[in-house]
Length: 221
Image (tube, rainbow, N blue to C red):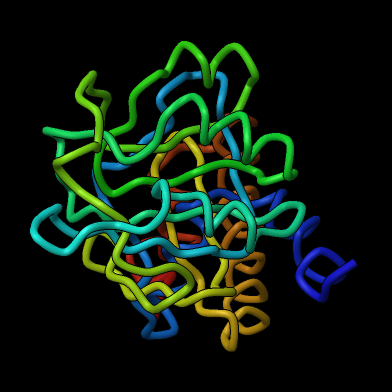
């Protein structure tokens, strides 16, 4: 068992991406992305260490392998494959064959700044896909893999191999590995405050009273 699974997975599994995003804002880290959502409602939580893939346009220089294959080979159980395709929606960079390979390897899911295809295949094997959308066009002749397990940009956020990818129905947040302890501690603190607020609201305390008591606007100060 790796350090992340041993020390953090269970703790993060109790939190939401919004708890973590707020904690990162409070601590001065940038990790919140936008526009990338689970392609099926049932895929509600995704969590794991990043295995990164950087895509580029196809052209005179040819790709040497089927995109994504090296990432699947490099991944360990519980990891998340995260693909930088620059937000492109006109071509796929993930499909059913890759999903089956990743599922058999124990990969938790794939996160794409771009589009996937073969969504029915992914649903059939219950392999979570988070993306900007779906498309039918193949990657062949359109894009190719530039590199695997290098630093990438993902929806405006820096991601390195081993950083933590967290997703739910609100979106995706990236946690830098060296700040994991600090960020998780802060997220748990904010989560407790919000749970206390909700408990009081549900008990009948007015929103004005609760807001004044917890000073919600300044919770991140």
